[in-house]
Image (cartoon, rainbow, N blue to C red; front, side):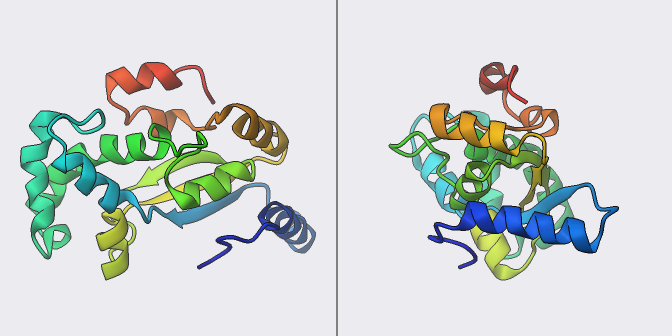
Length: 184
């Protein structure tokens, strides 16, 4: 469950960073390696729509490869899927929102709400059964830049603005990329 539902998440993140800085003064970069637990459920919904805003129609036919039990172990299937799934997971993390205007992914909401920046998407980094079933094997980095935490946190709370790196945004399809071109 991690810190799900813990209102002290912000305090805990800052406390951990402070403790790490004291124990390891040379440590300058604070980054998580986090799961993407709702991605496959969301992707299944998008695949089921007649017209998805987030998954290209031509990709839907290839995404049937995900229906095989060991698709992630098949090198050809994985290679084909990677080019289709990277734009989809980037869209999942950046575009669809809850009714309150926050990202639909609970892990993203936690880290972004605590001032992190969505830094990098990692393909086939969690090949446990749970990681494959829930997140297609993806994991992501959330970067906590000490001089930007409060600014990111405030922009997220006030405007739902998601701090994200060029590395993440470049995976978006062109129509979504325009929305995030100026955010860093």
